[in-house]
Amino acid sequence: MSLLRSARFPAVVLLAAAVLALIVANSPLGPTAEAAKNAYVGIPGVFEMSVGHWIQDALLAVFFFVVAVELQFELTNGQLNSARKALQPAIAAAGGVIVPVAVFLVFTFGTDAVDGWPIPTATDIAFALGVLAVFGKGLPSGIRIFLLALAILDDIVGIVFIAVLFTSDVDLGLLALAALTVILFGILSRFLDTRARLPIAIALGALAITTWVLVYLSGVHATIAGVALGLAMAQQPALRVRHELEPWVNGIVLPLFAFSAALVAIPAVSPTELSPAFWGILVALPLGKIVGISIAGWISLRVGNRGTPPHLSLLDLIAAGALGGIGFTVSLLLSELAFADAPVVRDEATLGVLGGSVISIVLGAFLVAQRARHYRRTQPSAREDEVPPPSATKGQIA
Image 1 (cartoon, one colour):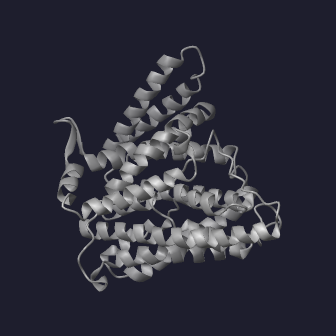
Image 2: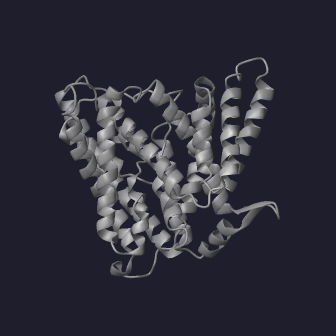
Image 3: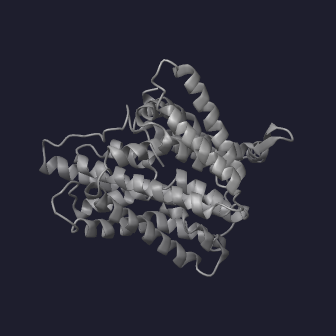
């Protein structure tokens, strides 16, 4: 279990799952795998979804619960618990959202693919911190803190996009009932450390499932249920639950989602025939993130008192920007949502996410290694400081 809580291993598992999916999809097993993904599972006539949707809507809600617990901690006791701490990464994160969107729109303006503009805005902490852990020995802890805060703010943006942009025909009555169950869940979680722990835990599980069903039926994307529950739960019990869920999320939930999302047949067409969405994402993730985070981060260093942590150089910001281009998990989900009615464009957008993320991984690894070498040479006492996790470890967020 400790391996699945490390910074390195989950990133390797995610990448392996995506590569395996591409191999399977482009082999004779492809049609069989696609049929399994589209097979319906559930209670016939009552509640059924395809296997792909169970992964995307149900399992991924558990991942977003873990994300929300981490957000709650960072906003109250962590790296974003004051305006001063949040200001610099918030400015950099804004640049890391605005510039990739602008780059994507340049490629897709005037086409139907323009609807995919939210896709290149996400940063995957699993990969970003994994690359940092492997290649960043000797980097100051400030760089890790900055990248962590940046990715957390990206998560908030991604959650807002999912909640606002990909919601249709909302049933306000069901949504109100879901809000009520979330409130009850939050109140009841405050009593989890009493003698009635077992019945309360069972009740919390029932409320969580009820909330998910109500949110799903209301028309709001079901992963938002995980976000709401994670933010509502009492912090200490939530951190313990997060700690227990982390290996399962890292080892099962996210690899399954990566495999399902990357199960794409590579189109046998010339590059010029690929959708503008593919090119927009492929360029926006590595280039847009580097430019946006670097420029906005440089501006942020001149806001407020200089020298307040994290104090980074422009080269540090460029390295962080390269890591910010590793979109993966949330970008893959946004691709699924943005082009749900256009399977061909969705598949090419998925390939764009995978390609752009791989470019960012390679580029980020090179730049981080260069910066780490610089700090080891100029600061011999530098050592590899890990970002302190909210509970036991900092496995990942998207």
